[in-house]
Image 1 (cartoon, rainbow, N blue to C red):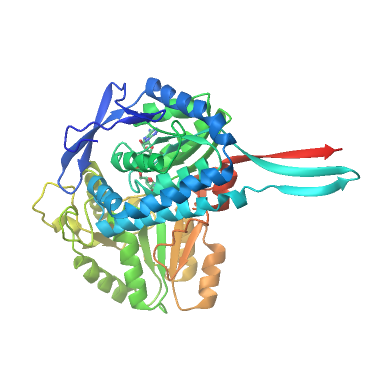
Image 2 (tube, rainbow, N blue to C red; image 1 turned 90 degrees about the vertical axis):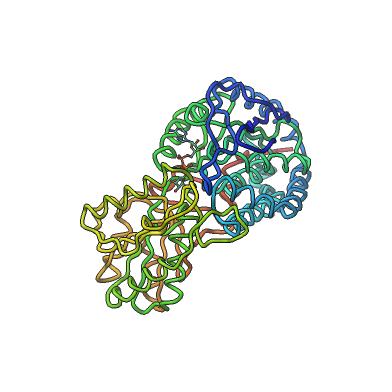
Length: 485
Ligand code: NAD
């Protein structure tokens, strides 16, 4: 693809890169500078139909390809991704704005899913019982579903597509990917690498767009299953629409992750964990801590030291040789939204103790310093809603019981963390906190490829999560064969 502000992002249909037939277009930015780096099509039903038809046409041959051969494509892909890791990280950083090391870590997480997929043939093996009844044998086997669709968010442009693609494809499905219209360039490069690894034409197709494109994909009669990752409102809508039409849907949504700090915690471990969780990737992570609850004695000292550390974080563009602690947010709208939450918290009576609005930058990028608001009450918007930016709310709690119920009240259920040296407290937290991914003295407890990415409540809609064995189960259906000879 040509580089520069007028470069046009292509679609991939049946193995051919071509210009979309779209009538609407969106700008892709370098958030570090606030300048356009490409134009992406907002595809409609025509492009979607061509992509789904190509995927449906490629399905019979791909499903018939032995699983070990499909897995060999993943072995080759793994080598290509390792070779290209630095270049991919640079592309992610350019269109998303996160730092190079954050981008590299995201690509690494994606590579681990490919490594998991290399071993899928053994997981795809079925069950067999001889002489289930006199003279009757029973065999259970797994079949791929057909055409699957992936709709992904802007914040992990390589990792989230790789939660889906290696597992879906190795299980024998064909796929249409619709990456975020804000970060489509990494997905394009990823699809090129799948082909370089030997994936046949039509097995993976890529279209771009917004609601119109998503609706056309979800409602297409030849689409069997939808994997979605994004905000809760859209996740719920996609889940409702898809399941009403009888399709399988797994839909990861937004989050409001609580970080609980008991007075017996190792302060340094807690501070570093909270900083990494709240401000890594500029807070644009579904596992980002957005509420910290210092519990009981020591909250004053904790908040004071936290704000000192936040004030010392470096913030800047990520497209220079320097590596700041934090890069820009994705867009000027995202920056305005975070500033709006900060102003709203002040109006509701919270106290801004680290103010990212005061930072000055000599670029037009979408930069904003990290902020902390103290004296937050559970009823305030900043305590209840996902902010998705570099803003941490302090919700002080007199005891663990209050902090646990504060976390439960959010209604989300992605992640939560407890910092403590107490085994009994950690056990209580793990048994009672209603979220799918918990950390004990670990700031960002995002599971690795062989575990499910296990959101609960308003952070996930569906039954089977992405990654791991659940991912394989989502992308296959079982068949039981009873035989008497
Ligand atoms: P988003 O919901 O705006 O967009 C996600 C995808 O849905 C994109 O491909 C987008 O084009 C499409 N989309 C947007 N609006 C739509 C609509 N009205 N109808 C149909 N499709 C629509 O999310 P985002 O801003 O790209 O990403 C950030 C969100 O994703 C945050 O809420 C974050 O918590 C969440 N997220 C969740 C997980 C998880 O595993 N649960 C992981 C990463 C990000």
